Amino acid sequence: MGQWVEFVGYAASLLVAISLTMRSVLRLRILNLVGALCFTIYGTLIGAYPVALVNAAIILINLYYLADMLRAKTYFSTIDAEGDSAYVQAFLAFHAADIKRFFPDWSYEPAPGQIRWLILRDAQPVGLFVGVPDGRGGLRVQLDYVIPGYRDLKPGNFIYTQQADRFKALGIDHLYSGAANDTHRAYLRRMGFAPRPGEQGEVFWRAL
Image (cartoon, rainbow, N blue to C red; front, side):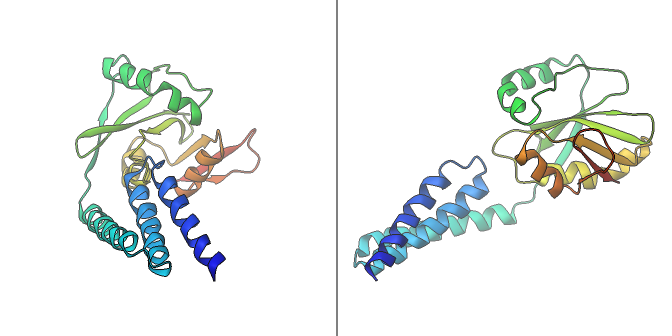
């Protein structure tokens, strides 16, 4: 019994510590809530009722903000970005190190016909999408980047699902992208991409 109680305490501490590393506020709240729940159980089991009481209050606070986040309506839109846009240049420069994590070989080279969309979430720029049509009905995704704190898959769903008709109006019926690492690979799968046999290198493909 003593070892089991001690395990609950360690688990609670670990969950709370991990929650503080989350860039996504939603994930932070969820992990913090689970950690607080473990601390409440731990405090009750060892008779540390002030610990249990404080963490029970933290659970209620997290539940309140999670419910508020889930109720809130999020509005997405895009702005076409010019190739020489000063804002785009500043955006890319500021987030250069983070972008390299997912697109290590990519560099910004504006070209005719290239699609460049700034992704706005509630009128706030949170990402940049860049792709180039291949002339055969496909669009090669060169960059699909969202800033930390907003990577809850909603921007990706907005681009790849809600903007499907917009792509089709441009003569595009499928999208494809490389995958730089496991995180990016998992993201592409969540967005409906799948590895395409017969392609050179690792290419993920998605029909519209």
